[in-house]
Image 1 (cartoon, helix red, strand yellow):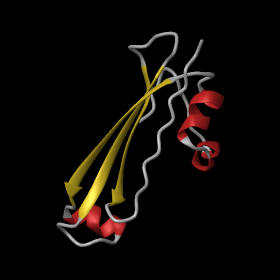
Image 2 (tube, rainbow, N blue to C red; image 1 turned 120 degrees about the vertical axis):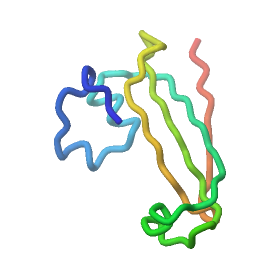
Image 3 (cartoon, helix red, strand yellow; image 1 turned 180 degrees about the horizontal axis):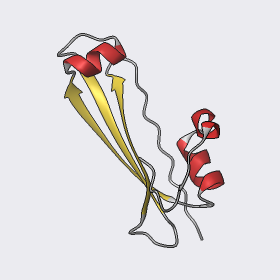
Length: 98
């Protein structure tokens, strides 16, 4: 989900960009804050059909929020994704700004 006031129009160029690229190039945010939540769930039918996994299989739901560095309470972009539980790697890097 993209905040309409930050992204008034979305075109095909967004389809080939990652979330960080969208925030940096389209919103002009060079150092946004990011928050993620990873939750283990059992797969429901619709999600199973999309992921090609059985109902009841373990999956991971990943929610990601990007916030403006200048306005930390302002959400720029929100993403919710689902991943099969047997093929997902989570990696995080902490950046210290001095």
